[in-house]
Amino acid sequence: MVRLVYSAHRISCRYPRRRLHAGKLVNNKISWRGDSGLKDGSEADLDLSKGLYDAGDHIKFGFPMAFTATVLSWSILEYGDQMDVVNQLDPAKESLRWTTDYFIKAHPSDNVLYIQVGDPKVDHPCWERPETMKGKRPLIKIDADTPGTEVAAETAAAMASASLVFKDSDPQYSATLLKHAKQLFDFADTKRGSYSVNIPEVQDYYNSTGYGDELLWAASWLYHATEDKTYLDYVTKHGNEFASFGNPTWFSWDNKLAGTQVLLSRLLFFKKDLSGSKGLGSYRDTAKAVMCGLLPKSPTATTSRSNGGLVLVSEWNALQQSVSAAFLASLFSDYMLTSRLHKISCNGKIFKATELRDFAKSQADYILGKNAMGMSFVVGYGDKYPEYIHHRGASIPEDATTGCLDGFEYFNSTKPNPNIAYGALVGGPFLNETFRDARDNVRQNEPTTYNNALLVGLMSSLVTTSSALQSLK
Image (cartoon, rainbow, N blue to C red; front, side, top):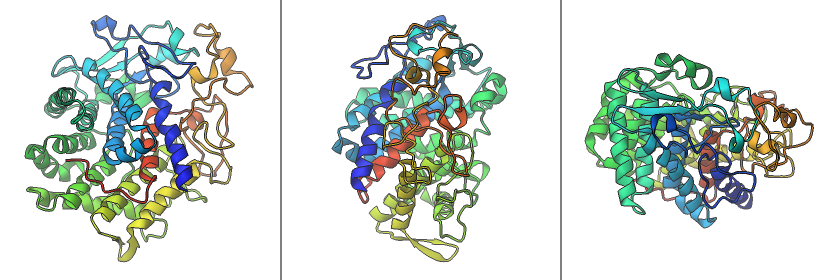
């Protein structure tokens, strides 16, 4: 099992850092990727050339990109030592910095944040490599007149968490990130408004179901980054309003509550004399309820899982909840083990912390090929994996010259993708454990940055039995 996890970890950390990167690529080791989006932001006299394309298209969606960065930061902070063992810590940090460099440029003043580059109505009818795209790249921003609390708060969380990653290696850069994080949180909180209400055109792609979770998530990360009690007081004060105590939720780019509850739980695990921690009990209680829902033999076990034991909530990008649930379970288990708390009670039934890790391993094993289909959902891993993923750059030969429409020759091709997007985690199977490997199967066969960020954390957590998780100070 250790060898299996190491191998997958190497794939998941290394390759996505260039596969979905925009801008002028430096030390690029993927032959079929090159510079792209070099003029992004020019209409506002900004350099928004960096950042990430969120999936198989060429739009830079700020909301899921910020979540990707936050989760990658969390993974590095908790499991950077495991990443370092397989020489993937530096690549992970490089990938994170590529994204936070973009956010710094996208936040030119206190109450202005550019949240999207590109227009899906222009981009999606095309099938072409990002290196050769010629369509217009309009910008969308939020500001005091058109606020977007959830995307501003998530970007604040991304920059606060990243400031911790770079705190020792680059204090000046860390301070810059923290300055932006504080400004963005203030903007998010004082100019409240849903970005998908104020900007209706985003609703078809990354529609938000509310911003309370992002405010708590951002405040939690700002407390970890600053130890300023103001942020701890914020999550305590607004918990009843936003935290949905007692109601387990699924962790995703849209809903950060389960992640917030686990993150705040670590304070109670590791900072016993923390001033102001009394109000955190409900967060940890709800985090425990999340864990009890994941344990298959728990009285409150979720029924949202396949016959093969994979947690499945949605049939669109199904693996996001599977990998996020496993990541949180592995974290919570490690928090328990490191704190010498070896058991958890679920409606009176006792479970060991190691059983949470067993659940996390079961999800990882399924994703890597231990399933009824005998298929790995990580591209390039195992003997059988998706060969027709919905990803333009992977599907078009690197020496091909195509325009917007003639690239569909490759979309419609019956041949496997000429370029292997190593490490890409696709959407995954349906509840009945079927999977169709086809380029037009967007629901199941499109990779995303946020899935991969979660995969990095999950695989890194499973390299060893447990970790002495004391990195967030």
